Image 1 (cartoon, rainbow, N blue to C red):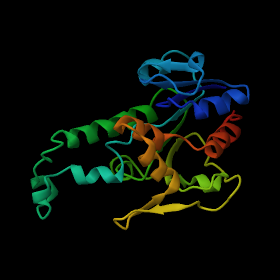
Image 2: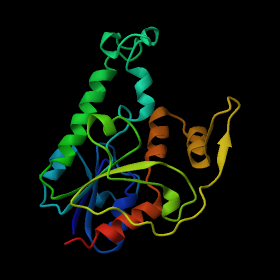
Image 3: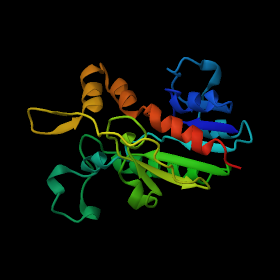
Length: 221
């Protein structure tokens, strides 16, 4: 199969498909960190879509403006009691509402692109209300990695993933504030030196999920 993995600099899914003999390429505006620049298209995803008659698109649109945590930045903090349409933009992020709408349109354009089979991945967030409900919600612990990372999938002509090896949910770290995060997430917060590096670490695909995607979607006819 000809597989395009959109918005993926890590090449985790790309390499899983390549290991099974497929013609897979990652695509991102960033250079790849997966060690195979010969399999990486550093360009706009819609330009990459035009390059080949792809059989499958697996896309990971940036979730900065789509995640549930982004909702708090849509409106002025002093306007919480007002109807949403009467609230002012957030003073720190005055363009956040338009950024959110643009991100939703980006996802819709990927879903409706010319590639016949499409899978879009994102965390729980605004897509459920602004696009549609996801077809499936998965966790890394369903595919052999002891970790939690709630991941929604929007699928077009692609079947739901079947769990491969259900394991424990992994450790959690509790902070002084009382909040807790999965250990892998807490480690990303602790080790990342910049905001961009933190976002990159948090967005990487767990290997078990990547393997399941390649195994189960790589033989679609």
